[in-house]
Image 1 (spheres, helix red, strand yellow):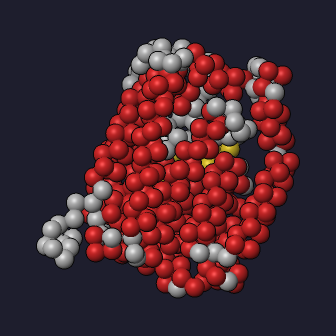
Image 2 (image 1 turned 135 degrees about the vertical axis):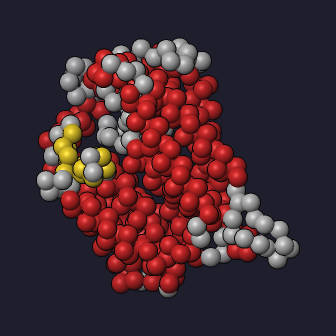
Amino acid sequence: MINIYGKRSKGDRLLLISVITVALFGLVMVYSASSYVSFVTYGDKFYLAKKHLIGLLTGLALMIFSCNFDYRKYRGLGLPLLIISVVLLALVFTPLGIEKYGATRWINVFGLSVQPSEFAKISFVLFAAAYFSKNPARAKSLLGILPIIAAGGMVCLLIILEPNMSITVCVGLLMLAMLFAAGMKMKHFILFIVILGAAVPVLIIAEPYRLQRLSAFLNPWASPKEEGYQLLQSLYGLGSGGWFGVGLFNSRQKFKFLPFSESDFILSVIGEELGFIGTAIFFAVLFFIIVRGVRIAGRSKNCFGFLLAVGITSLFGIQTLINALVVTGSIPPTGLPLPLVSRGNTSLIVFLFSFGILYNISKDLEKT
């Protein structure tokens, strides 16, 4: 794009460099955390890392596309993409659904397992940004925000039925962030917070396994070999890392002590291998990415670009925070990948694509 001085906008390259660096670091950590399990299970210590690499390369290819595709053209795709996401979420409950670890959160697409909830999150951001950008005054009335609440509620309902409470909470908080950024009235905002707050204990009580997780969170040592096992192993990993860690690739928790060490609990392996200092540097980079996203949103004078930037940045920040709180035992255990780092190709691809959109917004110098 050319600005009024005839210079071509380069966009926020620091954002791109940071995101790609974190994604590459994630590949290294996925290999480290999964090498033993891969060797024992598949006879190849690179097996799961190779699968992650495929997702990384696919995500980078889509990121290149979204970096160069005018983000304003997504405005007309918000509703269609949301409808497609809802259909995909519904397909989870058909024979296409794949059950893993007692939950059906994936569908089989040409032999590949895909997690529709990851598509639903970015689709919801696109829909909400497009909806409010067409008429910003909609955010000022309860009637005006009802379509967003209905859309978010439908997505949350389908996800909680899988069941997947962590992503349900993530989408709920994302919806709250989008409504707040759009200019929702404070009385409606407070009402919405109260409703969400009341829904959480109801959802916990509705499923016995959630009550067990809550009990394990309150006192994991009461069931060190059952519900409290994963949290205790995560804390052992983080604690044994000390200031400087046991060294890259030297984790002991990855030897089948810590379940999901390469996915939801990869942060524990990072803490164990790189220590407090390494983990602090890692989080500094993640925080830098969030700051760049906030900066891009703040500099945008285009309503759609502003809301889109807010949504993408909020999604990344919310999911990072929830994962960190779970791994450190600050909130009850729940399955949610660490963005750009954890193994899980659908999440990785969607986030890389989304950051490409964010970069494309930053290229729009006429609006900054």
